[in-house]
Length: 139
Image (cartoon, rainbow, N blue to C red; front, side):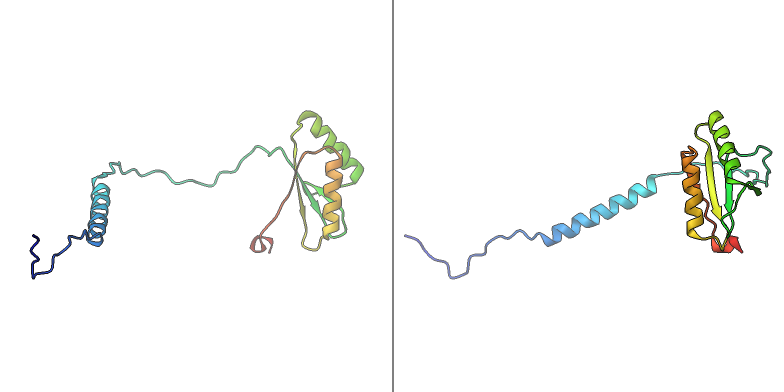
């Protein structure tokens, strides 16, 4: 015979929320302790500061400047297109990866720049870039 108790029977429950809080506390404590364990041992050094040095070697590149009329200057010296093609081909014979930078003046049209870009590519130059200056440095 089964005798019933007048008191309600309690079921045991496993509360997971306090376990999550404890795990977060342990994680934070572990991170703080591991950061404090890392000692950075270094020596104080007074290094010399860099000074402005001028290079005497001329960079191995061609800088083409296109004016507003579509005329080209090689390294600030005006040059005609046939002479420019011959000059580029002689440079390419000695140095196949000869870089050419093309820059335009403020009033230069986009079409003039593209014409010079196509001309340089037809001359056989593989490394061509457009030189861009910021607004502050252009003024």
